[in-house]
Image (cartoon, rainbow over all chains, first blue to last red):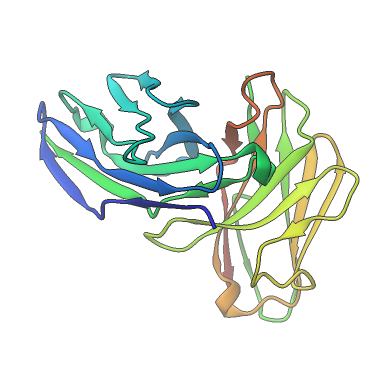
Length: 113
Length: 118
């Protein structure tokens, strides 16, 4: 079945450092790819998405590019802030699966001032 | 827009009792809602897909008689944990698809319900 694998955390960075969180997926069809974020004490919210190969999703300075050839969707940000401290989930969703979402294990990010 | 609420936000119950958790889409109609379980420092595990007006579809390994799901309207789905035991203690999260054109693959999440079974 479909699955998502993302790098284990926690990741600890200093403010203004460059962030990369790796994510790869396996899917039988052609899924949409997502990054969701869960801030402390809050529910998950969509950070960005991409629906087809070579699409780049972006939001709040975060970016991820849908790479079909490497089945990857790595999350990047050029300069992190303390407020970016959260848990980040890579995920996929397929129409054939009724749009149910499969999540990676999550990566906790700590950003130090 | 696309707000999902859950009630209660936390509940403590005695072993053997049943607990109902409500999930509501506040400003949109949700034909499909999903129920997840999240263990501490772990990812979300999909429990079931809830479709309005029909029986829920449960993921493999999830006991449907234990976790009763009802989706009686386009804005409300309920999860009832029957005869709860301490191992059912967890964080339960619901989500809903917006149904909007081009965004059906996006999910909007409730804030979650912390269940503790004593």
